[in-house]
Length: 303
Image 1 (cartoon, helix red, strand yellow):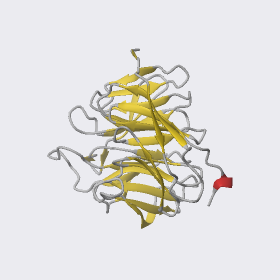
Image 2 (cartoon, helix red, strand yellow):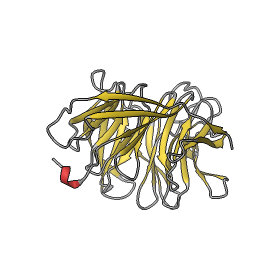
Image 3 (tube, rainbow, N blue to C red):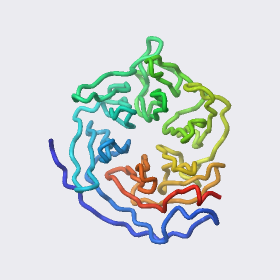
Image 4 (spheres, rainbow, N blue to C red):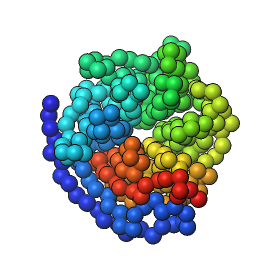
């Protein structure tokens, strides 16, 4: 297994808190570069082993960063241009493998022995566009977005939608009215599904009354030129605040959709994920993986 030695760098940013509510960002915020030298990073996910898995899409690699040693190693070569990643309840890595040259256009699962199982690659006889990002509910069902960026000549579907793969393996397109869905995240109670419509530059919230059945879409937040320029990936904390990547960094929104704060990043971020401790945020941004330590989100801080 190849070990990549990252160059560490720290960016110290002093921020003014924008709301009078819970202070999310420390007075002295450190955005630390923990791995670098990649072409385009995406899909951060914390594994059961505590390591952070992320993708370098053009290089067709999935990598893993060990926060204990600071080492980064290749987890999987020939990744199918994997983008979004997440671990299921059994500790298996689920990956959205995208399009373009070498893209597998499928959702896959890495088995304990290292073999790869295809979970979804077509719907109603047509190939998926380019699975991009995903979240997994408590039942083991997988929500994933299926947009298409870049060349579109080989698209077999005229809708860029959101799919739900049931625990039994049944694939259903559950959202069909967005322009180009990208990132998505479930609330912790799994009653709300947030989806980023990158083309429309907005975040939309859907009600989830039954697994795999998002309904009643409502605007959550705009992310136009003055607010992020379109969202890519997202995460969510214990207080239901949504962390959405945009032009200037990671935008933080309260549960009602109002902006709570902004974490500026040295490079435009693509995605982010909160570690199980609820205060360590990992951010993929172009050539690098960054780590940010936030103030803990606890019920006592709720506004």
